Image (cartoon, rainbow, N blue to C red; front, side, top):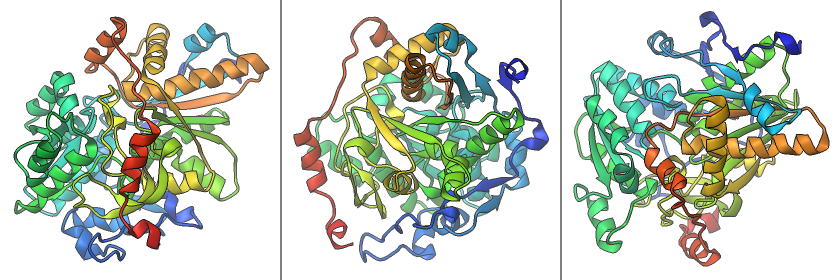
Length: 459
């Protein structure tokens, strides 16, 4: 069997998933409902539809339907870059001298450069189907904004993106790709919204945060006729769309009779991690298999490893619904680390509940070690990975070295969410020895956590 495993495992087009998988349907203990911040009662479909497209709002609230059919138009779009390959990292294994077998699901083989396109096209499709003029959103590293601008251009929708200011400045080329696709890109916090003006007044010179950018995008959506807000991570609807990653990964492994032992994904808001692990977690929930699942987050924004499981606002401006999640507090503003897509104060409710139930573990890693792992991977595997993805690479290497010490041959699978070719400022800082590790103090985290809404204490 070993000799028959190719370098890249491709699925046939007809093997591409025809349905998204909703892991919530197989969870006996469901994620806690999202709450209306005014009434502290579960958000209704009508309330949620004022912010999101109606079909997306339905998907967000549905925790009983196990599978959703993928519309044909979305499947036709997926065919441009899906199924994506599952690649055996033979060269990395050789470099590490490990008996472990390392596989990575590569989501960077599309124009947007990341997995974000899987949900972007779905959300844009439902917006157009509803007859909307356009959508608003936020973006951290710029991968989500790039993917959404591409999807909106394809479907002739207006796209307005609020990009976290430090990423806006660090990644000008990512910004220009968005503009090339026709999106309006605004650094956040801006002076265009009430939330932005308030943040700039309270925190002069702030580099911004995903929570703040979300608030601005929501405000922009609800103050313009014919617009809705869309989000690239955190929400259950996004994890639903991203389940194509895990479904394809499992199908590719099954095709060659490979049983994964360890599954690793980087974790910011939870979209890529949740999408990758969903079918595997579903098996665990049904008692069909057992895996070691590891969520890897930056030490600069450690919501799982140092946060609390509580109801919190999903945004800094406190205009969005409350979600029960592992959080550092919506007022926490992470340091300007280079893993912009992971700089979110909270974690997906689905991922948070799976973590709380013990179905996955979490680790935080510092960015200099992350870039060291990224450089090794680039040298031997020939792909320059995104800083976000490199968190998973770092832990995959750690696990492979453990196998070297023990002599065990485990199958390690991780998600390579995208490429890092727009992250060269970060690589330059690493190569020049200017990169430092930024870890918040216990006092900083305690201050933000103390400001959690009172509903946490009442639930």
